[in-house]
Length: 158
Image (cartoon, rainbow, N blue to C red; front, top):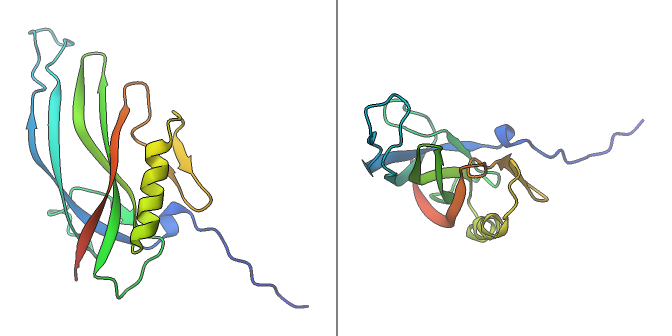
């Protein structure tokens, strides 16, 4: 009996991944406006700096999860991360300047395509699914809002 070759669609956690250095550069606001335990607070603004990518994690240096790279090439020196900017909050205040790096690519064109689809996706469902990729959209929820999507080139440090 012969066997047929079928291509299996990989799940997000099965893709090759890299560790991306992501640091909170500055943050302002967030102070409680009264002495009450549950009170309104000043809106908070954050700014993150997204840096280089690494093949192995160094927990004391990294402040982010591994980022999947579906079209991984071990010879790649630069990858293109899809960076999502969003705001969140709760009943008591807002936090602006949050980011998520759901996926990265060796191909700039594929990164641009996914970024454009994310920017255009106004549905408030929990996952983004196109013909190839699926991941949780942390920027969708009752208090969350999408502020923008960009493609950022990241250099490898091996």
